[in-house]
Length: 167
Image (tube, rainbow, N blue to C red; front, side):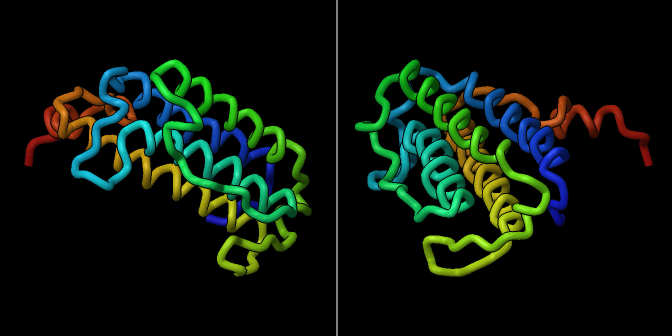
C-alpha cells in the first residue's frame, strides 16, 4: 500500500488505533505485569512499547529528528489507569506531528534509527505494521491468560463459519 495523501491516511490510522483500543479495554488491570516467560515483555510493556515507539521513534524521525526511544518499562507509567493515559497522551502527541504533514511531505526522506533513508509514507506504513504486530502479540497474551478478546472486525472466525454458505 502506498500512502499518497495524509487526509486519507489519518482516518485509516484512526481505525487501526480504534481496534487496538478495543483490545486494550479488555486487559485486566491486575495482569499488566504478566509475561509468558521471564525476560519477555509484559502486557504493560507491550502497551507502553506501542505508545513509545510511535511517539519517540516514528513521529520523531518523521519530524526530522533522531529517534529518542528509550524503552517501555514501568518507570514510564505504572498501573492500569496510568498506562492507558500514557498510551493516549503519546498518541495525541504523535498525531499532532502527523496532522502537520502535507502530501508533499510524504515523499520527503526520513532517516530511521538504523540509518536507512526512506520516504515518510513508507515509514508511516511501517508504523502501522508495527502496531498491528504488537496488537497480535497482545491478543495471544490475553488468550493465554483466559481473557475473551473482541473480534477484530465484528465477527469471530467461528461466527463467520456459522454464517457461511455450506459446501
